[in-house]
Image (cartoon, rainbow, N blue to C red):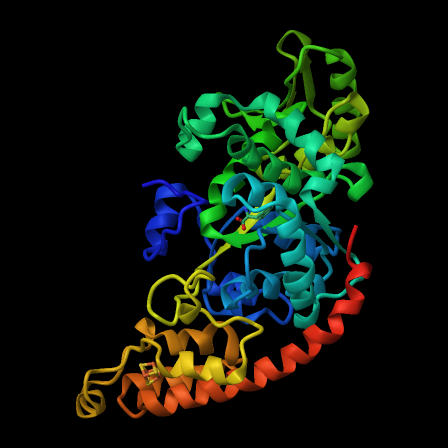
Length: 438
Ligand code: TRP
Ligand code: SF4
């Protein structure tokens, strides 16, 4: 199995994905541990993560952390696209600074859109929708890949530590792929890591909320971040904790610096072995590694390094399209667009695939299957805030006390309310875009 960020595969078995790719489980308990957690975190829609513990730690200690995500605007924005932004807005509310990349280079390289088309989609459709959904201009920056020299320079520089066979293994690239496409994951890595440049806030944990199709980019970015570090802190084969200098220049200066940092952190039993480019810390335990590593990272720019924290990521499930396949802009009947009229949305919902039985009688007897129902997903992902109400729908559906016709009507009503409200806000958002653009 391979995850391909550019295919239209749908993923069904999320726990298998986790196992196969070493994604950690994002439990509902983890989600609930946050201040007023968002419903996507509470309800298991966000199902996996990499390195989220670092974010948790920084939130708890009220230390600065960033969110970066990206969008590849193509056509109209639908409920599937809304999810990432819902998460971003939530993270903004608990203190993250927000960075959003408009992936116009990627859209050019992989979808054949011109930069102008992408700009048009972003400014007319996506960004006003983000604002309407509640994104605030404070501590928020939206930029275009093609207009950000720092991102492009970094992409090029970061490429130094990746080779072709790693790119092939990660993405399945072959000899006939065009070079713009092949380079686009490095641009995305540039997006993800540039927020740690001094100009954009410096070294700090960065959370990248994405759909699981983006995991190859996350793995690549984490590898690259690590590869560019000057120090490595680890447990050695004989169970000692050591700081190692990874480069051959400035070794003694780097060791001096590490010694100073370690003493500041109150480690006293240090054994320096210059030949190994190492300092062993005899009074440290495994749990100290993160702290030591972070303190060292923050000094690396003084020695010409980048000091990147490995970026963290959360992965959310994809919402099923109303037809039962993937929700996609190219199949309008599968998607509800934020700009749909309530009448069109109602029609799509009334025609949607549910988990109901073939006859009413059977449904009364055996119940419906909310876990396989698009209408239920609308409630779960978007329409119902109150967990109790959602639970009631689930239970009464399973017990055969609820019929699909009524259920759809209720969903259509809630959707109508949502659409009327959001469209009003989208209209008034168009004048505010400047405040968000970098
Ligand atoms: N590749 C993403 C997509 O297909 C868009 C994207 C570009 C992105 N840069 C990013 C996502 C950085 C997360 C982080 O939608
Ligand atoms: Fe889905 Fe509602 Fe029908 Fe249950 S009753 S299967 S939740 S539409």
